[in-house]
Length: 588
Image 1 (tube, rainbow, N blue to C red):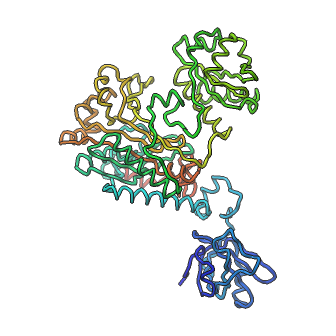
Image 2 (image 1 turned 90 degrees about the vertical axis):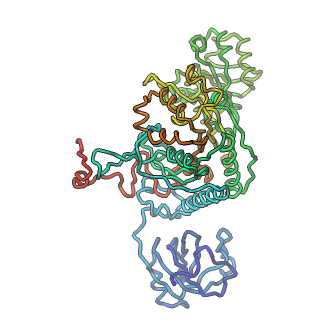
Image 3 (image 1 turned 30 degrees about the horizontal axis):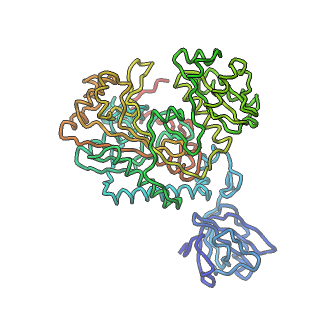
């Protein structure tokens, strides 16, 4: 037997027992001919003592141990000597006095120590992921992911959802991002597409009568990466028939409450708060606002129209907006150089024309190089509208509505972190609902689906499809956690005529619709029930619950921002024989 107990299992109650434990050598210390080894596995660490009374052969062999050797040790559980108890370890009251040592495998000197306090660079960690995954922090995160997925599965099983696997090899359909394509060997010149989501399949399942579907689904999108995005990701995907938006939202409310209770040990007040999309954009400049702190966007366009300040007046007269935020008490923390850096940042990253700022002095007076362009009475009214107090820093962007949203959202998010305006351990859950049905694509000079082309409009907005699509609101809802979109869903179109009308608005004619989505359009003719669903990003949820700021920290084998697996070297070249079998010729 290679082990009777794990390295995190032994306690004072085991004193006197003969045990066998196995694991990796974490640390070793030679004290006057007695060797102490901390043996580690994913359950914890146990101190092992090699002493002369345990056998000279064992002691001699133990002196050859090095970090990350894999060993098995048999011995007797004993209390640690007085004064050597380690209260920081669950096994800190005991030690195993070795009587037999077996070296199961030796290790080369690792590129970094899994339990070192100094974290190596991410590239090194990803290249040697098998070492990185030994780190206790990584193991806790992977176990957190396991636990959260199990809670999800149990929850939906209790609600009578059916877990159905959908195909990984499917047809390429436009869903907002580039597909990963897989060439077919048996049908040269044709391609499968890896699923961006199981969207169409789960709608088919609703039409087929499986009125509650759920799946932990692997999805793939060939898009630019960032800290919270991967080319392959995992989502909790679900669909329900005979429901409204409120029904879907209610089910997810219950899931979040259970996760918070069982993972964080806290109670979550339900129902989760809701906010209309238009309100979110006005108040926070983003459709996934972080509601752990205030600093809302304040519109002063009406006052800008009374100003002779060219920057404000020009934006207001052109139909744009002048909006600002109040960084309470921040005036002394940001020098002129700091503000110049902020200005350069929003101009570069958000295409804003500039940043206008005021520091609030004693008595509420606004001080800034721009202040000379305003009358005292107008400055007073601006200060009142911004709820300004001495020590505050006011920042304004004058531009189109879209630019003011992006720039001020960026500033708000940055100030929230730099000024420590929220407790990073706190979780805030909310919903943003009733998104626009369409967004106008300036390049294509046509309408594009805000979510996807199968999203149903609000019943009261149906007529707007023909008269004013830009004002049409969708039965769409996003779950927002700490300023991240944690999930998104919609009520789907279940009427073939309405679906074809939406396709036409999106520039998809009848022939294209039949070619791309013919199977769905055909299915809608055979008694499709009203249905809707949602997909939750499991990677992102685990990142948030685990208090990580990078999604790669919660995925066992992630890709880099260049979509590369540094450990395996994927993507890699393939041989000419394989390419010929797939009828592919490289143009290079």
